[in-house]
Image (tube, rainbow, N blue to C red; front, side):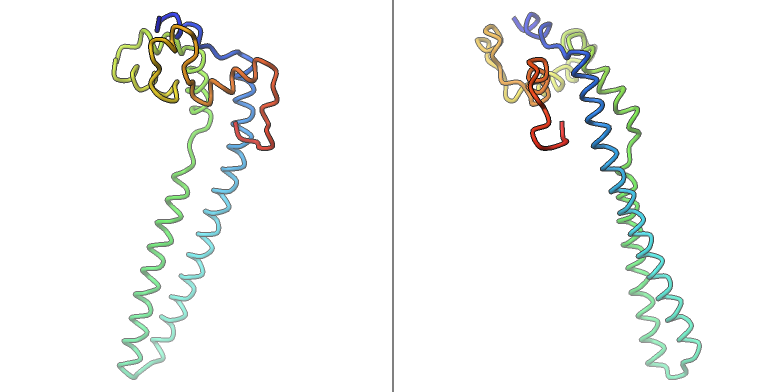
Length: 173
C-alpha cells in the first residue's frame, strides 16, 4: 500500500520548471534584500570607525586625566558596537546560499522521490523524507484510499496539474 501510494507521488516536469522559475524569482528578491542589509551594516561600521577616529584624535589634545578616561571609555563602547555590527553583517552574509546547488538538489528530490522514499540506503533519512511529504502521519486507510494529508508542495503540484493559477496574489510558491 505504501509502495503503491509512493509510486503515484510524482511531480510533473511542468510543475518542476514552474517551481524553479518562481523560486528563483523570489530568491533574487531575497538576495537583493540581504545584499542591501549587508551594505547598510557596512556603512554603519564605517560610521562607527569614523567616530572612533574622532574620539582618538580628541584624546591627543586632552591633558585632564578624567576627560582622557572618559574618551577611552567612549572608544571601548564604540569598539563593542563595531564588533556587534560586524557580527550582524556576517550573519546576514551567511544567509547567502548557492542557489544553483539548492535548485539542483530540489529538482533531484522531485524527480527521484519514489526511489528516495522506498529504496534509499539510510532508513532514518527515508523516514525524515517520508514525514516531509505529509501533514501528519497518514493512516493505512488514507494511504489505501489515496487521501492522506499531503504537504503543501504536493498540493501545489496537484493544483498546478489541474491548471489552477498558483499565484494567489503572492509570488511565493
